[in-house]
Amino acid sequence: MTATRTTAARTRRALAAAAVLTALSAAACAHGLPHPAEDTPMNAQPASTAATADTRLRVQDGQDVSLHAEFQYTAASNTLLVRYRLRNGSADRALAVFDRGSYGDRAGAVYNPGPIGAPRLETQDGGITLLHAPAPASAANPMDPLGHAGLALELKAGGEHADQFVHRFGDQAPQRVRWCVAVAPFEQKQFRIPTKTAHGTIWAAGEAGVQTQSLCTPWFDVGTGKFAE
Image (cartoon, rainbow, N blue to C red; front, top):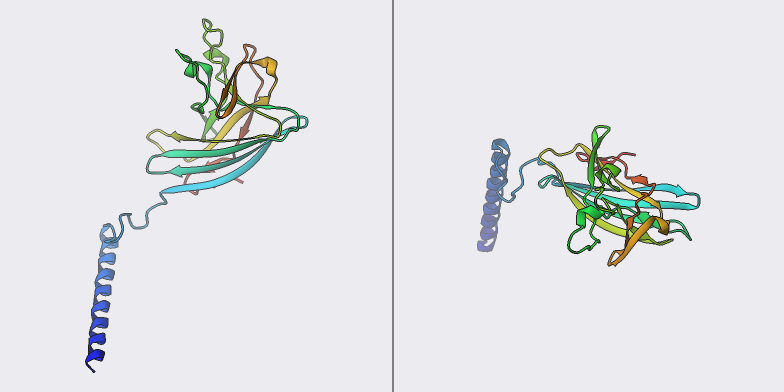
């Protein structure tokens, strides 16, 4: 009997403790206070949203390029992480991928290309486009023979190129965003100053420039965390 009474007493104490926690939780919700066991607000929006998308582009006859991209938007820092993988579908033609920025961005005492360049921002169709592409011709410096020549990674025939970057937006969060990267058939006569890096061979576009095409992801809705179909 003593053991039975002891067990019953323990049960009553456990039930009482649970009732207290329930009351605290209800009060927290009612007064907008954090839950005793949690640091996040009640009914908070997701801290981040993420989605993946695939798209393709016909660069020229017999040469397709495919793009697999993953977006992850973090509200607290108002940043977008873009992970991507490009595949050159050609069996015999290399591809120039202009995701390395411009020569003028890194020209100095030591020319050391390699990292991803900062994307340009363009407002289009009510959203923000992050664009990796050669700078407009007007940005060239006539005193510098290279000007702001676009830097391109040479993607071999049948090869893949994967990388990632983080972009921090300003004070206002975007409603939707997409990323575009310029690509072109790689014609060696149009490029110069090859530099071997851990990412691959990087070239500066020639003075005549290179005709590029933009490979873009669909629009990404920041609130829903989904790409447009």
